[in-house]
Length: 322
Image (cartoon, rainbow, N blue to C red):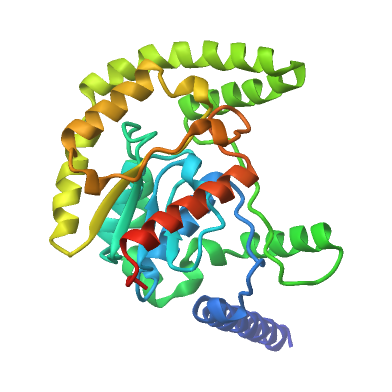
C-alpha cells in the first residue's frame, strides 16, 4: 500500500516536472510571438543597453543608418525607421562600434557621436553579449535574450497598466537606473546636482555647471593624452569601408558654456586631425538654439529638433539611400 502510494506520488512529480519543462521550452522558442510592444521594461540602464545591442546583432538586416554614441545620442528617439539608435546610455561610442563590427550587420552609413569618444569601452558588456555558445544559442532560442526575460516582461506590463490605467500595447518607457561603475555613478550624481541647481535660478545653474566641467577638464585632458580610442576608431573606419560603409561624425549640442572648454576643444581638434576630410563631418549646430536638462543632455523638444536636423542632412547627402 505504501509502495503504491509512493509510486503514485513519484509519478505525479515526474508528470509535473515534464509539464514545467514543456512550458519552459515552449516559452524559450515562442517568446517573440508572445511579446507585444510595450510588454518589456528593462530593470536597469545596463539591461536596456543589452536589449538594444541584442536586437541589433540578431536582426535579419541592418537599417540604412546606425547611430553610435552615448546617453547624449540615446535621446534621439524620434528618428525614423531608417535609423537604428545603437547609442548606449552611460556607455562609450567605442562599445557601440565594437558591437557593430563583431555583430557583422552593416548599414550604409554609421553616424558616430564624438562627445564621449574617449570614454573606455565596456569589455564586460561585450564579453556578455558575444559569449561563446550562448551568443549563437540566443539566435535560435529567442527566450534566452534579455528582453524576453519573464521579470522584464511582467514588470513592463504592470508599469504600462499603471501608467495608462488600461491594458494597452502602448510602449512603457524604460526607467533609468544607476550605472554599474563607481565613476559612472558619481558622474550621474553630479549631473543630478547640476539639474537640481536650476531651481535656484539660471545663475546658480551656470555656476554649478562651470565648477563641474572645470574638474572634469583636467581629468579628460590627461585621458586624451593616453587614450587609444581614436586610434582604434581609425582602424574601425578602415574596416567598415571594406564593407562599403560610410562613417560620419557629429557633435551633439550641449550648453553653450561648454563648447569652448579644454576637454571639448581637445577632443574636437584631435578628431579633425585624424579625420580631416569634410565628408566625414556633419556641420556643428548653434548650441544657443538648443536646451538641455543638465548642461549635457538635450531636453525632449531639442532632441527632436536635432534628430530632424540629422535626418535632413542625411537625406540631402544620400537621397537614394533607403
